[in-house]
Length: 427
Ligand code: NAD
Image 1 (cartoon, rainbow, N blue to C red):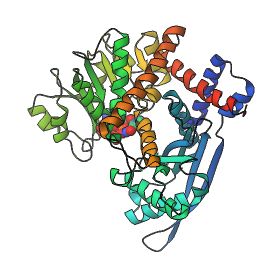
Image 2 (tube, rainbow, N blue to C red):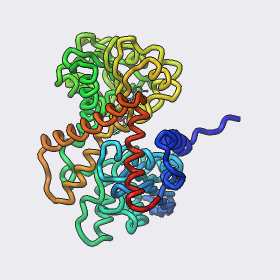
Image 3 (cartoon, helix red, strand yellow):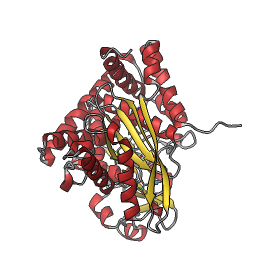
Image 4 (tube, rainbow, N blue to C red):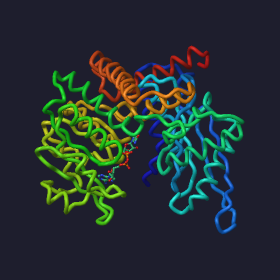
């Protein structure tokens, strides 16, 4: 009987492999394989019909040796503590690889927000933070939005926390609306961050982005801003894809002389579906879902979902592709990854490529703690510096040691956390 996929077991296996390479001693391994702290709790919510429904919530702090734990809160019907543990672990490595002074955390509630009214969601958010308030905060653990949570949820959580704490602590939570202490540039941050790393990767290949072609999966937050900046830097995006709500399948939109992001946005519905007919009338070819993968381009950017490049379709990637930047989390299966490695495609791994989001969240926290907010240009300049420095460290280690980029990124991240634990005398 096949064993069910367990994200936390996978995170531990990834860690074990790198711990072997780094020859970490047993104490450090035992410490870093597990979360330092987890909170499991129930949240009673009075529903609109007067009944009381009890929801199950979690907060996991994987490691805070480098600074307060950082990570989102997910609302999901299939949430499990092992998913939350895995995501908290990956946050530890993501914050470490971009060298921000934060650890890794994640939270969740087993629920489907689509089944809850706005009032019920507000009660759930306030109930969540009442259960963990003593154990989170600007100097302990800083939450953020994640799957099915949004800036409004963050404001409700902040408001309840501030009532309990008796003051204003906007640095307690990130991903807030700009009107309540959010950072300018957060919307652009992840997509731009992906392109900062692509730009650096091209430099390593002796090329610039000028005149280079890219194909992207997705046309959401990450993909749109990645496409915008890529074009601004002189590149050409020949394809993007998106999910079609009416047809319940995805399509690729291709224009060989370059897509126009603003035009495509103008024909994208509020559910994120690009209008096929209008696109067709304006020179776009509407192709099948996976067509984005086989374009003759130098750069591929999966920026939609996990498990998209698999053993079955990796062979469709063109010989021309030089760099694959993982905008999405976990878009490449281990089977496909082995093929990319073999083909010597330069992969920028997800927890480095898409770390612009958490880096900007860190900037939001810093600005809130100072109660002084930076102009957008300053936020994006600092983001560029952080992403560029992080990319260069990983690429240099990869060059020096011959390690695959993903392995080099893990080595840097895990070594940084291990060193912090060691210096603190924990192991
Ligand atoms: P989003 O919801 O804004 O966009 C997702 C896009 O994927 C949409 O265009 C949707 O139509 C498309 N899509 C969905 N199913 C598809 C399919 N089967 N084929 C092709 N396209 C499909 O999400 P986002 O914020 O852009 O996030 C994209 C990925 O990046 C996710 O893996 C997310 O976890 C990761 N990520 C996002 C951020 C961030 O700050 N937004 C940060 C780090 C990582």
